[in-house]
Length: 395
Image (cartoon, rainbow, N blue to C red; front, side):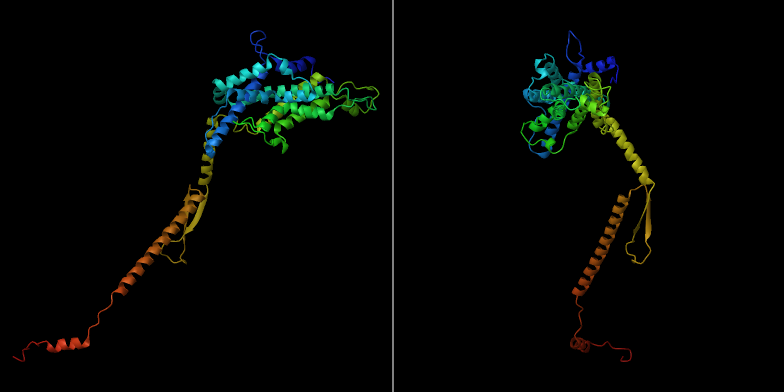
């Protein structure tokens, strides 16, 4: 069944093979964009690892590694899927016989690592424009690798092992098609996770995909399932129900060219969907983020101004049964009002403690001064020996 016209399907499938110039610069445009994406992700991972080691205090690490190690890491992450699928099928990888593929990725690596291209793309090009372009190039190349190498390569390799079914159909190696299709579309990331290639020191460790499948693995498996199902003669025969008009089904639901074009659309859509959840913050410049945050702060302050908080504070020195005057303030959040109330209560308690201390000190001083009681004998003797002044009568 033809879904697209032959011109549109052929144009979409041949789009990843476009070059800058056929004679002067015969390098693939999509391969260059894919290499730029992988190189940028690799450099960002190294910078993040260096910052993390500096924060942890484990020692300062450079933001870059030796160029040989970095180049091998980028090539492995870019071409590792096709290399692994080809080795499992017993075939040499296609990029090994090409004079364009490896030089294209090497040139992209040099431009990102040792020129100002990385800073220009990171600071001057908005992520909302850059990320979709790089993801479309990456998804198109992955989809073609899944279709041509993973699914069609498995059919060709295991064609001798297939046997005729009862309805004239051919048994297809579904396990090989799905497994090798997934590896062809996400094998580079699997090797990078297994060897920890995005760090300064490579170590063989337990990869994370053995615990849970990564997003790239799920996207590659979905694309492989779509292409295998849409081009499977066996599935086509089951859906037709053995119609007399179609005794033998030599083709699938879609033509191979149409199925490849649809697989490209499926893979690109899935990859763009992963980037959609971070588009609100991750794909806008920092100035836009700061303006959004300031607007959010202003709106929150206005909401706080519209609220009235009433907190009762007891007056210092008053009885507990006395009515409390409510504190009504506007334009201050509840947390600040609560802190003010606690501060006022603490000040009142401090004043009461100081007054109690002063009164206790005064009592101690008064008790320390003993009253002097006069001796009665001494007082009488003094009175008796005192000479009485003569009065007027005596004179």
